Image (cartoon, rainbow, N blue to C red; front, side, top):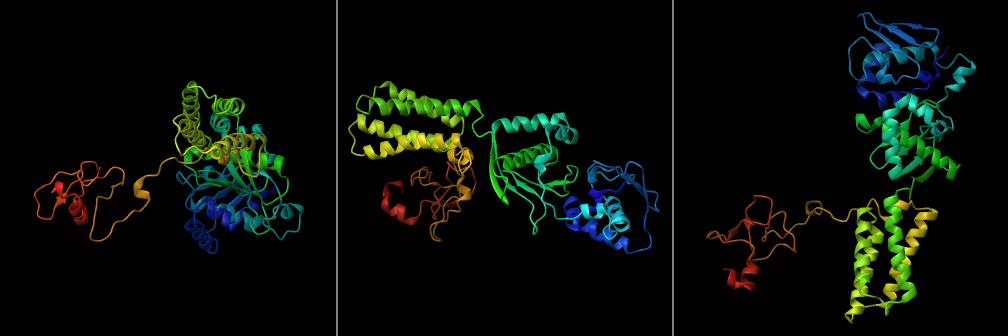
Length: 388
């Protein structure tokens, strides 16, 4: 029995599974005389025996990093990599049989062909339950099908990338996720390919979304918001009751809890327009109010029916409402240094007590850091002489 999966492992695949140093070390050992002896058992298990007494067994349907090796290494080792290279040299292409042709590095295939039973056999029931819990919340993925330039099927998730290195095999995959999350994201990648095959059978790149509106919290939040918008359309702003403000506040809290950023911001602007009309403010704009109502219905419809853009992006579920100040890289002029955590809204020229220094050195009590800077700058002292 020939191991087509081992023959399909290219040098780049071995580098991805191990590292470049182990592959180069195995290549040097391959050109020396101290080579292991290979034996192929009836079930296809490759047994490599080294001169130093180490024995490596490359079993079928077992990831290369988990193959039994008596060297005691907890991760990938040179014995496993050298065993694969030795097997490829002894049974690789050039024999002219059908198996060698099957091991071609370029093949148009989809990991979506694996069902949940195959996933359970590979990752286990516990990891599969975690993956299903993640799927129930919904996620977005970018599916890249194999091409002649890049024959490796790839799925780009929000936190990691999963690559299927061997055609029709789940054992040889590579991901940059944490070790205890690798199997979970492997199942998510297979489901993403399965969804892409259902939506767009052709195309090298497909953006897919799994369970866009399957979360009850999301659907309930959208339903309450659209109910409020429908009442405003039917009754008009003129007949808006005072209870509409409380109803809008509850709907906005539901949107924030479901992390629906764009509908939440639209509803907040809608509330401001209602308050402006009730208080007869000049900033009330009927056209803007109509646009906000239209936006709420349009975003819900686009997320429900499915468009070229995933529903999570239409609803803003992955958007951040706040950004830490240190990520903005704000700087002041050279002659006006301030505390690194200064913000225009919080800092005032009178927020720091004087220390009596001739340099007018201040330590801002509103700042979490302990840096002492010249504060307030000279121009503020001129503008507010009372703080001197």
